[in-house]
Length: 334
Image 1: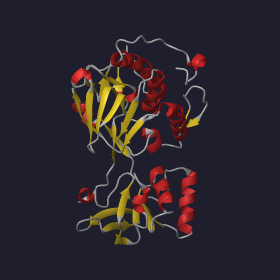
Image 2: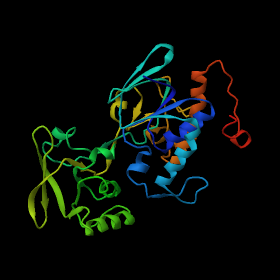
Image 3: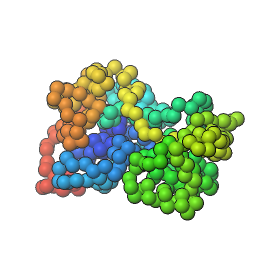
Image 4: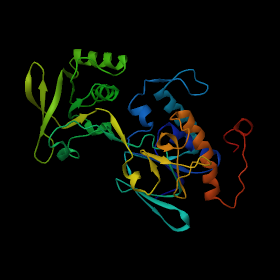
């Protein structure tokens, strides 16, 4: 069982910055995210997209912002549980919480901050009959551990950054990598597109455009994927793993069943400290709502800064909280 002061659900930019603000108050943090890596939308959907409204940065790439936030919170040594979904929550003695994840991890926390952006991200699954039958035996929607694909035959489907980046990465370790895309042009970063084209030209990967997967077969595990290509028609390809990477769709998920006040798929909060109607549970970032709410990363940073003040008073009611400027104390002096 993991013990922490503040459990943060969501390891996107606001969740990561919450670690920094909590760390200044000597609060220990643990983060959980359904995605296999930190960064939320910024890492999974648009890592190469420039952001223009982060103070001090006229422009910064989304992926670089996440890297900087990770560097910023390093002194506070937060814990991470990635690739797992927050499923069930229970209030126990002394007002603490037990949270259980989809993989059976148990986290004991003094307070919970929901910083899940637009909610838990669910993979967009292609409409292939019987696909779910192989979701643990050959069909993956995320790449959690690249070593899993060592010397395997891999079929990747998609045309965005994730599909391109993993094609490039897995080409180094897999026995064979095939990338299929329904169009001839790609949505990903130009640099990644050029690398994929170069790999295809060098015959280090198979690239099949104007194609899509339409069927899957196998006994106890995935064995073949049926592909339909504009000119070649239908044909089968033997694979060990099929990885459809069509992006993510946000859903509130199990959080919707936690008796929180919900308004249009967002959690209502008190702007004094961004607390919810359930004592000890807070919500910051795009997942919350209140009059005048703006869904900006900057606003989420502000919300988490105020929230952790309240969390400190909840966990240490007998201690006096004195605000200190980091310009005077630095990080180590706080």
